[in-house]
Every structure is written in C-alpha cells, then in structure tokens.
Length: 212
Image (cartoon, rainbow, N blue to C red; front, side, top):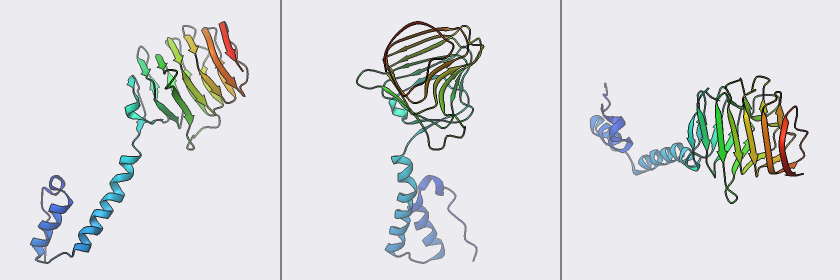
C-alpha cells in the first residue's frame, strides 16, 4: 500500500507525525515505541544544547560576548582591513587555527573575569599560534586581562605591519613565545606575567613592566 507522509510534518513535530502515520495505515503504536522515539530525539538534540559553541570562519568583526562561548576559530578566519573585532570579558576562545588580523582587535577582559585563549586538540598546523597581524593596514592590537595558554606563539606579526600599534596590559602568557614581531611597529607591554616564554623578537619595546 502506498503511504503519503503528512506534508506539514516538519512544522507539527514527531508526535503529530506518528499519530497521522498511525491513522493512515490503521495500526496502533505501542507506548514503548513512543518512548523510544522520545529517547532518540533526546539523544540527538541534548548534546547540541549542552555543548553550544560559536564557529568562527571567514570574515570576522563586531563584538564577542560570553553568550557565544566557546568561540572556536577555524582555518581562514580573519578580521578584514578597516574592521574592528571587540572581545569582551568572560569570553573563551579555542583555536583550531590562528585568527588573522588585517584590521584591528580590542580584547578587554577584567581582573575578575579575563578572556581565555587555548589551543584545540584539533589544531591542524605544526606550530600553534593565536593572533597574527598581517599587512600595512593592520592598525590596533589592544589586549587587557587576557590569559594566553599553552601555545607556541601567542601574538605574531609579519614584516609588513609597519603601522600597527600593539598594547598589552595585565595579561598572562604560558607557552613558548609570547610575541614574535618581524617589523618595527609600536609595542607597549605593562604588568604582564610570562611563564616558560622565549624572547620578544624584533620589536621596539617602548615600555615593559612584567614579571617572569
């Protein structure tokens, strides 16, 4: 016998569909079948609810808040020229690949609720890194109360970022190299803690007030 499925199934839901289906083929479903369907729906939907996340790909700008936690940065994510990405206190960022900054970024946490940066187990490059500034149009990198955890490079810039102004306050760096800069942009670091880091490379440091 040919069976036609209720056309508005997607809007009416699983239970309505089962009732319509039962009436069309004139059989009764046992209560155990309804329980099984309910359990399968629970298994399918609840993990997505409990492990909500924001996937970061392509062009990025605007404001990140804790409501989107965690933010998972994937390959190809970048802040375009002339654009600003603001990261607010309490934001957790997991890096599967680095975030390229062709414009500006302001990451401002607080003493009681810092911003957290960590490397995903799915990192797909040889040397993990977090924020990479690129090109002469990269303008501002402002970091305050950010915790950088266990990465080979925390903040890097290429040799074309001659107009970049980089300011870092009250941050903690735990990993290999806190800052790797290949150009002579303005860099200011104050009241930061470094653990297990290499040297800051090729930068004109205006002021450093840090503990190690």
